Image 1 (cartoon, rainbow, N blue to C red):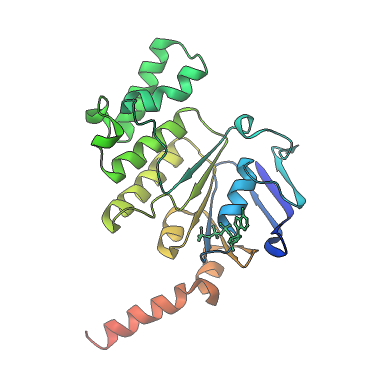
Image 2: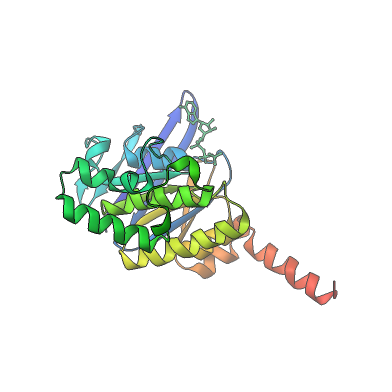
Length: 243
Ligand SMILES: Nc1ncnc2c1ncn2[C@@H]1O[C@H](COP(=O)(O)OP(=O)(O)OP(=O)(O)O)[C@@H](O)[C@H]1O
């Protein structure tokens, strides 16, 4: 297992937010966690990123205790709805940033950034500033910044939540393509069951601080809490009544 989470708990005051959470992720997997608002998804990702500390439990990355490791040494990237870009830097420099601070040679940086921009269909926008881009383009730049440093784990918190339906669908396909190509391991949390089914290789459901992991997509679809079976039945009934 790349990541092992065991018996993680967290409360804010007397409100339990995560209750005895356990899960594991092998390299290259995408664990899609579906959950209702306020269920504890963000708190879980923040603990993994090192932005919150749990009250109890353990997190291991490749078998090593992750909890004492400072956030900037965890080799994880945390992406959320609002892409975090440097407003005064071009698209190219935003993507190059992680390589520059790691003192990667100039020629190699230029080549890797060019390849990443091409892969994300951003080649034509390299010299623009973030304010000259659409929301979907900004989110692609944010992806490029994350992926170029080859993180060990990508943490995604409703990353496409602010995008319109078509752009969101395009971004899901792009995420699939890029994460397969780069063998990225991700924990992807979303409110949207279709998004979870599209991007996930493994599935979980988080509600009121309790995480259920499903052995297969079948169990995920059939669990009444995910509402997927009910939605499928609805569309079937619409078809049968001929509307
Ligand atoms: N720093 C904090 N102090 C006190 N309570 C908090 C804090 N952070 C989160 N909470 C509470 O913990 C609960 C879970 O929050 P969390 O942000 O993890 O939920 P979520 O599942 O990500 O929700 P959403 O999808 O709406 O972002 C909420 O009830 C929230 O009010």
